Image (cartoon, one colour):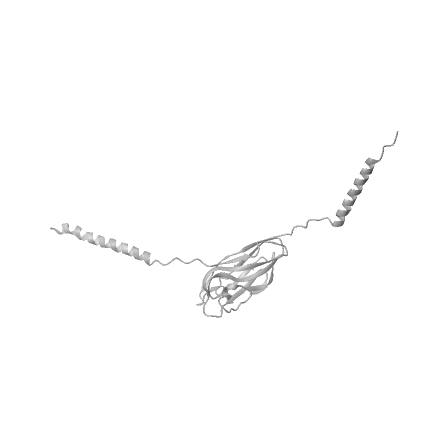
Amino acid sequence: MSYADASPRVDIPRRLSKCVLIVCLAIAALIVRPPEASASPIITAVPSSSNVLVNGLFTVDFVLDDFTDLFAFQMGVSYDASLLSLVGVATEGSHLASGGGTSFVSGDTSNPGFISFIANSLSGLSGVNGGGTLFSLQFQATALGMANIFAVFDPDPLVGDGLYNSAFNLTTPSVQGAQVSISAPQPPTSVPEPATILSFGFGVAVLAVARRRERQRPLSRQ
């Protein structure tokens, strides 16, 4: 048998080996594929009412949906100073405090329309899991319009805004703001006073008696 006749038989096993190797590499790539990144946590501004009257008061809770091992946070809040007035300062929520002692900072309110450095930190060694209210703010509606309120995370790393786990790894969450519609109070409906009603009733009664007497009076002779 010549060399030319034997060469095709030698190429067949080599081609099969290459095919098997390619299939094995493809399967290995699927097995060791890195997991997809988890969804970013969300902080939502939740107002006690989405419709308020001018001069009315309402509260906004800043709620974290889900986070594992939350140990500390820092952020700011933006609001429409032309429509809203901040009442007091931020108050601590129940979520982080459920993990033990905390050090809450109510923030800097010196700039109307923005509150910076609202922060809180646990004093233990581990964080809390899940979601809940981080802090709350109270506002008074001062003018007609649609007011926007939302959390703000400064991207400057020197500021330090974000969520921290117990290893102090930083995560920047997504935010969902709140819209509050401010309207004017309805004018009160006028109600007649009791004295006015009695006077009107007395006048109607006198008129009825007069008409009855007029009917009963005999006609004069021609």
